[in-house]
Image (cartoon, rainbow, N blue to C red; front, side, top):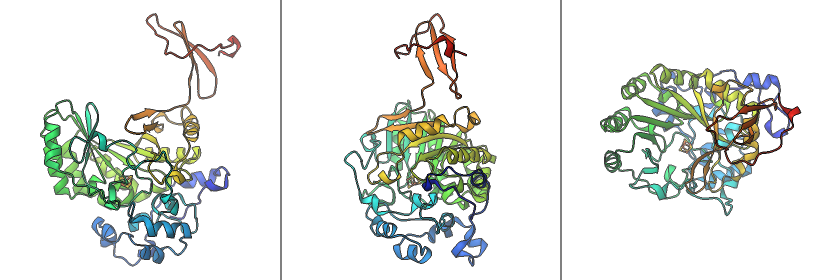
Length: 412
Ligand code: SF4
């Protein structure tokens, strides 16, 4: 896909033409695999079998590999495996060292640099795991880890201790024990299947698992967390969609970070899921030199809506070991949120959250809109910086912020 791209590294804001190009849907193309028959290329199992997983393949397909990337790739299989589907590989611009797709999946030597505040399990999942593969962190819902495999591996993955098994975690989910725990805990009304990627299971295995969960009367709601529609849209077959629609209410959260990931193939795959009645949300990780630009982020969020996906979260990148080169600042995240709220469709504005280190859960972070609040009034500002006063109701309680002096002349 050779569209004009914004130069986020130059410090220059993307041009209007570049932003328009980012919202254009085009195919990932065939690239190196132009001789592969359609039947193979469109077969998700073929894509998985032909993933780029070795340094030798990377050098063969990618002559512009930099020394930092080569060194990173040579060490990757001791930390988080190298793995990229041919389909997704075609989105990388080999001429651009700072290509936002490239930064997400090609290892770099900086992954070996670990700061003292970085962790292997930044969300404290292992300490909230009553049985292997199940995380019970919040009162009414659980995270059900299905597999440690993904179609491609994201270099900033929060679960890189576990996924790909390069670090020797030796993940062995025990579905019987996981399901028995849920059945024995009537407070669990919501089960999120994740991993690794649950859509890597065969249709039959996934159907069996979803059927067993649906048979538990207190489970009201099922969710899948998956990056497959983005890494491997060929997996979203009509048969898969027909199977999934038996288990409503079933929601799917996808994970997309940049508008160039939203190709015609991805849009069509998401359309098949939406046509099956599955509500779709998106989780984005805020990443340095990938999407830490308000215009690029806005183009991405608007493009998601065109794919029938509601932007759900922007995550501050977790403190995963070796991720400093990919972490954008919280200041940048707040600045982006400031440029979204009020400036575009409300449906396109997700919640920006920090997953509190060590297992504190998601904490929303946003620009400050309440300027003062006391028993009589709330003083707020809007997206244009105009200030308004709202009279507090008789039973109102101040939210704790000390009142600031607001000049009458400032009020609209
Ligand atoms: S798809 Fe998800 S679980 Fe897999 S490597 Fe990427 S972030 Fe991690």
